[in-house]
Image (cartoon, rainbow, N blue to C red; front, side, top):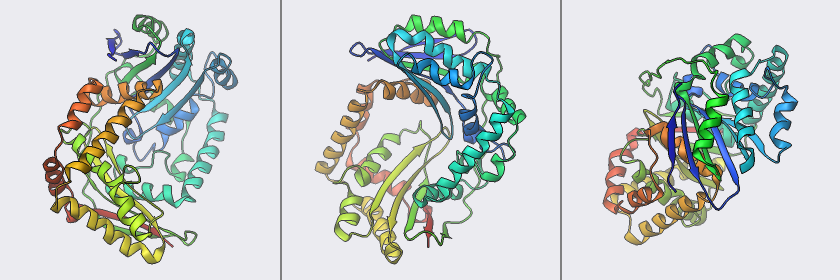
Length: 408
């Protein structure tokens, strides 16, 4: 499917993709700002606003916001990441205008009632407590803190309890003023819709948004302070391990090679980590690798959950799998299987209008363009065993790895 793009006079970007075989629409309003845009003074505010914008506007109270699309059979929600925030809706095609009406209202007209701010602090602090009680989630927070020390990319998206208690209305309004402006807003939609109609409604409902031109600037990322950190938690009867490295930005030419490498290690029950560590030795009940890409950097890591007495051996086996990628090229048959899995995952994902809407936004946010599925598949097909081994040799050097361990 091809997409269409329009830039409004106020700077808002609109991208859409018509899908003829559905009768619904997924639409998202993306703010190109997330937790990495925070400072020590307002940590947690990006995610806090994701909650607060549903608490009432000058036109609707919080019940009316929740009820508006649900009464039409639709749904509205939001999420926050390290680099962007998205408010999105799923509706039947005939309710496109109503969805834009609602999304524009909460983004432009939220009143942020003081009593709701105080109540939401308690909700989010409870949410943080739940993460703290879940070592499988907590280990990732610790890993990112260690990978990006004293830097906003290392902050938990949800924030810290001590900082949440300090959030006031002015902190929220300042963040909105700085980042919720047209040059950082992208509207994407996928489903049974006409692009011109989407543009018409966007012009109508986003016409009053203030226009600012605050450029996003990334400060240098500090050096890693410690290559290994161990945290003790007396309530945890398992050991959770992440060992990983910084990599490169979303736009790097090696991104797809790293995605293939990651898949070799971690995709499916036939993957190397699953077969060679979980199945062969039975010492990790959960093990997988992961990648993240940002505007100016990225990361690759391997997570494992194991019994405390097996943690040392588990880490050694992980390092052995990394070493094997460096020393020996992937076989053509294994690579063929991985490529087939990646391609099927990509194509099957396009059966969801929500996934299509997300794909439009993420690609445009990072590259200012959207590659076709055929272009992506071609890049995957062109990756060779030599490409993977060369990247492993350049990137997966033992001295580059940082290891974070949460144990009892």
